[in-house]
Image 1 (cartoon, rainbow, N blue to C red):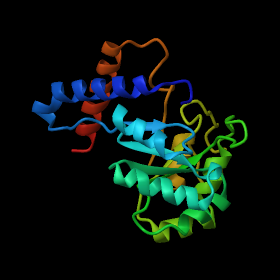
Image 2: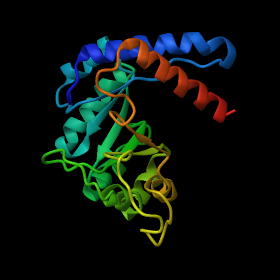
Image 3: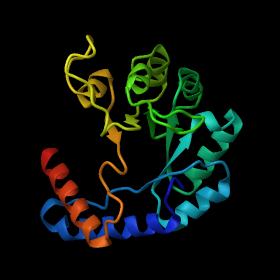
Image 4: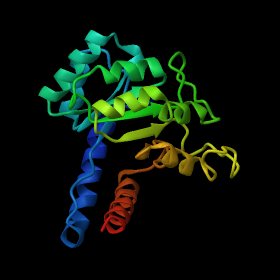
Length: 213
């Protein structure tokens, strides 16, 4: 994986479960789902992720021929793993619009470049995808959330930099139709031990459950 391992997923599953158990009595929450991010090209990778404790995977649409994308989605479903489809272009969004309803659990619009996985720190790539006609077609077929990822916690744009959506970058994403964002190192820092991760998850779980009540 991108700097991680299967063992990280197992540890994340244990930490998430431990955090939820400690707050379950007062908030009635369940363990947060574990999303595994990797360049997934073969079915055996999905089997390994399932055994490690992953609840969902992110498939990079631009790295997979249509038949392979469809096949991996079916394998994931058989393992009771939800599929998020990560896109970096409108062509990839058009491919998602051709999938049957219910095939994917969410769309992820990414600020990353497919060739070298570098991040567009202007944030324009994700915004343009959210506002595209191709995204409208995807929404017509799939009634699912759309997330943004790729530097979303680090991108800084001055208020009013976009005349269509004044405010911070996160506000622009929300205004453009994003349901939420996916962050990694922007939230969990290198060197954190398991107890620190448990405390972090407790904080996020409690605040999230209270804000939604």
